[in-house]
Length: 219
Image 1 (spheres, rainbow, N blue to C red):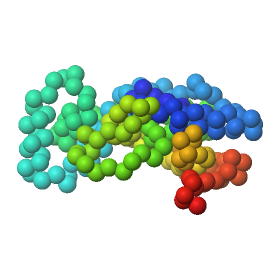
Image 2 (cartoon, helix red, strand yellow; image 1 turned 45 degrees about the vertical axis):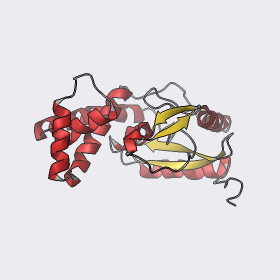
Image 3 (cartoon, one colour; image 1 turned 135 degrees about the vertical axis):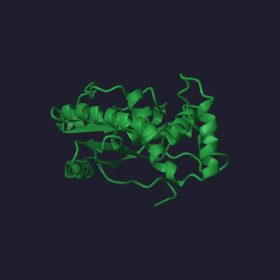
C-alpha cells in the first residue's frame, strides 16, 4: 500500500518504494498491490486524530481548553480540517470517546481478518524523503514540498496513525537512496502481537536489499 488519498506523496519516494517491492517479488516474496484490510482509510485517519488529540488534551491549560471549546462550538458539521478535528477531539465528552473507541474495535477486527490472510503490510512512513527543517508558525500551518506543491505537514500523521490507531506493531527498514539522493525507508506493519514478525522481515530485507546508505557528505 504505497499511496493513499489522505496523504499527498512525492513521486520520488513512491518510485523508490515500488522498486523495493518489485525487488522483493523477484526474490520470491508473494506480493499483492491490491490486498487491503476492509476499512475506510479516511474514517481511520479521522478517528486516529480524534483519539490522539483526546489523549494529548490533558496537558492543555484551562484557558487553552476554553479556547478550543469556543472554536468547536462554531464549526460546521462538514468541516474535517485538521484544526476542526483537533477542536472536537480535545473537547468531546467521555460518552463520545467511548463511541470512538468502539469504532476502533471494529477496525481492529477488520485488520485481524486481513492479517489472517497476509503476513505483513508494506507502506511508507511519510510523504517524502527528508525536507528542510522549519519551526516557524504553528505546526498545522507549516507546509512541505510534495511534487513541487506545498502540502500540510500534519498530513504525514496518516502513515503513523494507520497502524498505531489499532495497536499494530511496525518497524522501518532502509531501502537506499531515492532519486533526490536522500535515504528512503519502508514501513513494515504486522498483526497485533506479532512484533517479531515485522523485525524478522526487516532483518531479511537488510540482508537481501542492503542496509542504511548515508547520502553524500554524511558518510
